[in-house]
Length: 122
Image (cartoon, rainbow, N blue to C red; front, side, top):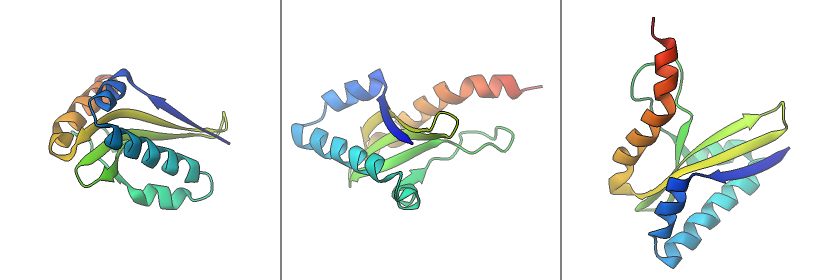
């Protein structure tokens, strides 16, 4: 199984605003978690925090997680396990200061789930 890391344009913009030390630490944490996924999947999920859905969408759970880089920096990401294609995809959406996490999460969640919500409404 392959582990892929994809980043969004917004993540890249956020990363560019960080200090060199913050960038290096964030990239190292992401790479560490991704490299451990195949052999220590449960441990990787324990290091992630699942973010709740903004509204109830027919019992679905959020696929968004945060990864703590250090006390004041978080990465918002998804982990998609695709057994058909034999891969796990880490998609990086944002890297933000802890104080900005709620606002950033809301923006990511709205963009990801708005289409799903529309399709499920009667």
